[in-house]
Length: 247
Ligand SMILES: NC(=O)c1ccc[n+]([C@@H]2O[C@H](COP(=O)([O-])OP(=O)(O)OC[C@H]3O[C@@H](n4cnc5c(N)ncnc54)[C@H](OP(=O)(O)O)[C@@H]3O)[C@@H](O)[C@H]2O)c1
Image 1 (cartoon, rainbow, N blue to C red):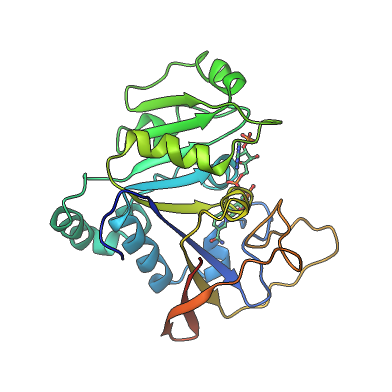
Image 2: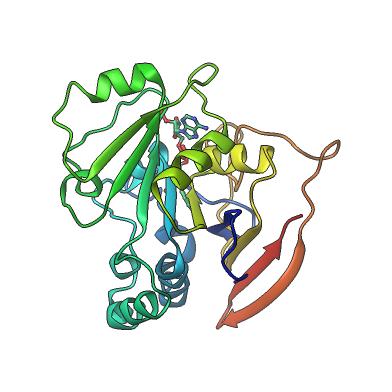
């Protein structure tokens, strides 16, 4: 990772099938685990990236797919909890990364663990209408709410990043998606690096089945393609762990 500097360094981490699917959108099977085959090495990498991150950003869709989750290293790979903790300490980081949840409409349940457990500090980035809706619930002490003007409920990714950086002193930002949120970050060319696990399965798709690709809600190629540079490849059995830099 680059040395700390004033500008945030934004990385993203996803797992995809060989045929480019990141969510099956099947009840009980829509998470990344069904894509990776609950691969231990993939979870280890997720944990490692969370362990060095100052901030983890997710959208409401990612939260709804895994409502009991809290975005820390040890929740995704408890086997290395002690090592992750040591790494964070050695890097002089806070105990856990700030968990940022993005929702335009603010239809979030503040009793969920990410907000109510006190395990992490959370920041909700939303619209004025979303903030008004959220404030009808009891807001836990560990939760901050930031309202941002957006068009049609969509908040620009740069504003999300800015809101996160106002709360977090650290500048290593991990975007874990989902695909709608990631698309907004690519649209504004805010992703510096994409970590992508290629899982050795073909999931298949039917026309209109709602299965999701890495980026949704944005079209880049052929007119405005986002080309990356492969900067690292590792293999764990038949899974490939890819790392791309984007200008
Ligand atoms: N394979 C993987 O590595 C991986 C990684 C992450 C997620 N996933 C899967 O992806 C699926 C979710 O996909 P998704 O695209 O729906 O996820 P998402 O981007 O988390 O969710 C979309 C929702 O998040 C909010 N949102 C996102 N960007 C926003 C913006 N710029 N401004 C305002 N609100 C914004 C909106 O919430 P409101 O509707 O509340 O306004 C929007 O409806 C899940 O099944 C999840 O498991 C897979």
